[in-house]
Image 1: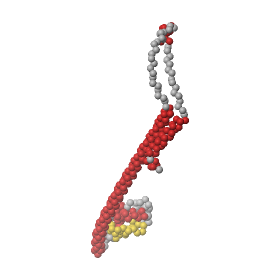
Image 2: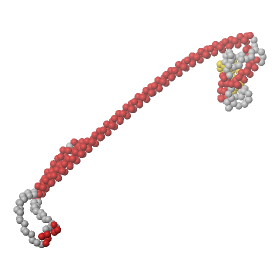
Image 3: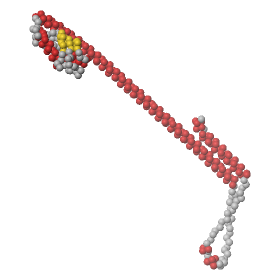
Image 4: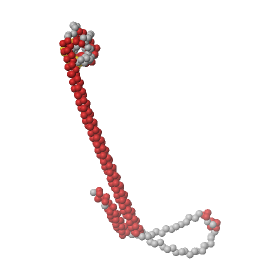
Amino acid sequence: MSGFASEHLRPLMGSAGLHLLLVALIAVAALRWTHPEEPVQLAIEGVVVDARDLPKSVRSGKALPAPRPEPVKAEPAPPPVDAAAQRERAAADAAAKEAAAASAAAERQHADEQKLRKEEAAAERRKQEQTEAEQKKQAADEARRKAEADAERKKATEAQAKTAQEAKARAAQDAKAKAALEADLKRSLAAEEAEGAAGAARPGVKDEYRALLVQAIERSWIRPPSARAGLACTLYVNQATGGTVVDVKLGPCNGDEAVRESIVNAVYRASPLPAPGDPRAFERRLEIVFKPTE
């Protein structure tokens, strides 16, 4: 409805102005027939004269000689005033002014509507541009996040592969070290058998050897706060030639978990264990009763 009114506003306003003009002319004609013309009134002009401006003879009361009469020029009579025509012209002028004002108002309204539509269109364009910019920014952010996630996944995959390779290399090294240790243990066992065949150690040497082992373990032991007096723990230790500790197992022990773990760690820290004074007293498998001094 508003689009129809804005497109046909000027023709409608022109038609309304024309109708107003016709109505005014009809009204003027009606007034002309119902009201007779008013008679023309003539104006009489007079001049006020100050007595001081008169001649002395006049002021003294003496009669002046009569002036010679001058011929009076006949002035053309003014044309008769047509009041009805004046009223018609005035009414027509008023109607024309009203029509012009209505037309000007219609043009201003049309211009305002055009300006409003342009402003709305510009605001819509700005809104659309802002929406497109936000969509582009969101797409760029999503692409960046995706690229960063891909890079993180690639980095994690490479790290996992590297870790797997390192674990594989460590496993190979551990296997190699284990094989070497087993070979060393075999040689130690063979040496022990040979020494046993050669002869046993003198009495008391093994006791001295075990005392040396207990002292070495106690020096490496870090006493936990939960350790109590009267502590006694049995240790089963496997060692290689040279005193290298291969394995430690804990037997009966009256300490708590922290005490047990600290004693096992002390055996590993004491490796290599001290050698006996008589090589024949060396034992690959040891049973040691650990009783730390108070």
